[in-house]
Structures are given as C-alpha cells and as structure tokens.
Picture (spheres, helix red, strand yellow):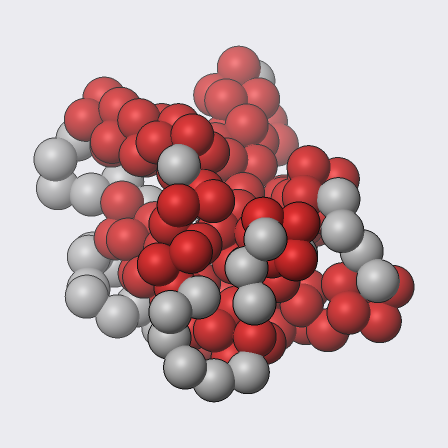
Amino acid sequence: MSGLGFLPDLLILSATFALIIKFRKEIARLFLKIPGPRFFVYVASSIPFIIFEENINCLPTGCQLIPWTVPVLIVLVIILGLICRRLKAHDLRKTTFFFSLYGVFWELIIGGLAGALGLGLFFIFMVFWVLLSYAYLVVVPLTILFSQEIGEK
C-alpha cells in the first residue's frame, strides 16, 4: 500500500474504480480522440490506469512513479487485447472477470499473494483486492477495444 495507509488506499482505489465504471464510455471516448490504430489506443489507454493502480498498490520496496511491474502489466494488457481480437470477444464483464482471475493466479504464483495463503481472512480480502486491481487496469481499455458498441469510430 502507498504511504497514505491502508484505509485511504482502499477508499481511493475503490472510489475511482466506481467512477471508472460509471463513466467508462465517456473516458473511452476521450482516449478515442487519440489518432492511430484502435489497438494502439487500447494499449496506450491502459498506461495511466496501470501507473495509478501500481502507485496505490506499492511494491514492498516502496513507491516509485514507474515501478518495474508497469512493463509486465502492459505486456499482459497487450496479450489480453490479442486474445480478444483472436476470439472476437465483446463481453466486457466476462473478459474483465477472466483477466482479473488470471491476475489472482499470477499473483499467487509469483506476485504479492505468493505465500500468503495462510493469512486467513486477510488472504480472502487480498484476493478480492487483486481482482479489483486487475479490473481497474482494463475496464476503459477494453471499452475502447470493443468501442463499436459505444458508437465510436
């Protein structure tokens, strides 16, 4: 968690996620004004969300503006986009859920949840937190990728 503390971090990420969900189409339309191929805009739009989320969920070594995890998450977003294009996916909820679930498994294997299974209720909370964190990264980008449904481009 960031230097603000556990409760402020929880409130900031949760409140901004709720706003992102509520205004995702409007935010997506802003990003769609960026010239270039839709896939480029999809990837580029994920970067501010990744940086913000990673600075709320700081690494144990401390907060950095651009943590080392940012390139890894960008690669995961690229892979997600390629899979969505290949499978012609257009369901935002299912795609976000499966990406978030993948994020939980990723974190269990090599990330922040590795070795945390024995923490009881805190572990359960952290699973939900990781689900939220991974969803945070892709809601607007996936809205852009699926943007024919919001009447853009």
